[in-house]
Amino acid sequence: MQSTYVQLTTFDGQDFSEVPLIAGEYEGCTFQNCNFMGGDITDFRFIDCYFEGCNLSLVKSNKTVFLNAKFKDCKILGFRFDTCLKFGLSFSFDSCQLNHSSFYKTNIKKTTFENSQLQEVDFTECDLTGSVFDKCDLAKAVFNNTNLEKVDFCTSYNYSLDPESNRIRKAKFSLYGLPGLLGRYDIDIE
Image (spheres, one colour):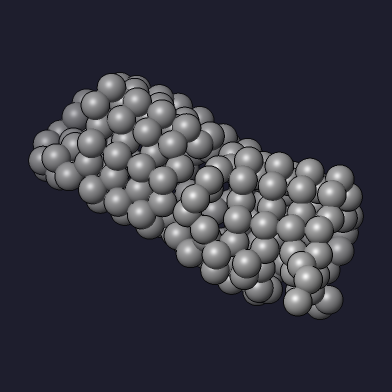
């Protein structure tokens, strides 16, 4: 079966939960205000694609390729990035809702998360080396055996992580964020 190849195309306001996107490879495409909710993008390839104002909540993404994908103002609840193809996995997020999503065991070095909600997101055994969390809400996000070396948390909040069970060498934190680092010690910080 021949795979569809789509290049430099804009999809605007389409409801892919009603009429699914055709399986294939999408390169340099823009998806604006599209609804993928509950759909299946298994084995799709998104290369240099831009998603703006889209709903990708609860989408199946087995072996999906995201290479240099950009997400802005998107709702991406319960998304399993850990089931995507690991090779070359790269993306950035700006003003997105990623609550309840999973990045378990992914290698996503130098990923940028800006102005995003990452509540109860699973970063267990993830390699986030050199990533930036800029003004992100990380309430109940799980960091366990996670590589956080050189990660910038300076402007983010509500995170709680154990320095003894994560690699945090040269990571950046603000004084405001100290309770999120020292919470396990049950001490009062004023």
